[in-house]
Image (cartoon, rainbow, N blue to C red; front, side, top):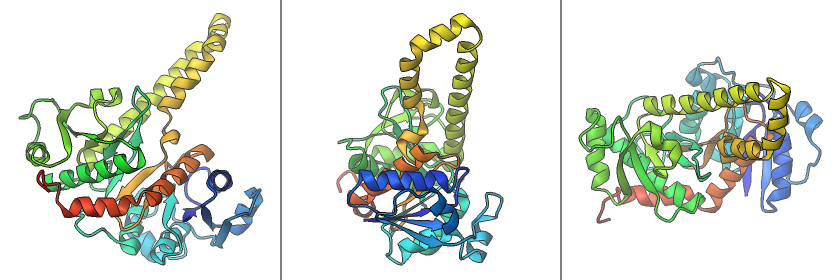
Length: 332
């Protein structure tokens, strides 16, 4: 199995990507990795070249670039070349921590959308109190959606959670402003009806305040709402840990207490750490594409590699295709 990595995307490139690749090669004997980026900078960080190849390029897509224009004009950009490795069947999956819109565009242009998928979804795993996490789709691949799209997201999410996270019967919830069936917009009311009559294990509407309690395994919504939820969770977690750090270092007695509580605090931090869950899958394409967080460190990139490997190994793309083909019909 081979995974292509855009080694120039993200805040910590290429060092985080190179170190993660070396770690992944040691962890997974069946894996080969292609790092795409500035060869001189990559080799400066590379401590083991076993089963790691380099494709040299100095061109990259910046966060400030317009996605469609950048993908069309910067054909030698590290992200574009990583996606093209998958298109040319030189790699089974690819990963980038770069410009989200550009990765979405490159994925559609070069790899293409799966048959039967109306719109791909950008879908991260987010933390829950029990540490199992939940899949949220969509978080911004498409700002608007139709009820049929949300049904497809549910089918996609179910397949991913079954194959990658080994959840036998994933519980699917529809993000809404209340749990009652008649709540929400026309979109959510129509989606509720479709989901209720599908074969997925639909538990009904779920509210944003209950998501981190693990109320369900898959949460579906339009990209605008999903992005708001994602950014709110990230911002809240960041603020809480910052406030906690300030309080625990504010005095000598607080520092003593912090020393005693450190193991518990580290455990809590791990539960809330996005890096432990990998990246956001760009589901609905013909091959696995993972969008790692822009601030990904070595650990986050490593888990994105593990996630991509699992998707290939469990044939998630094919499972999604099979499930989409039956349309989620309750009798299918």
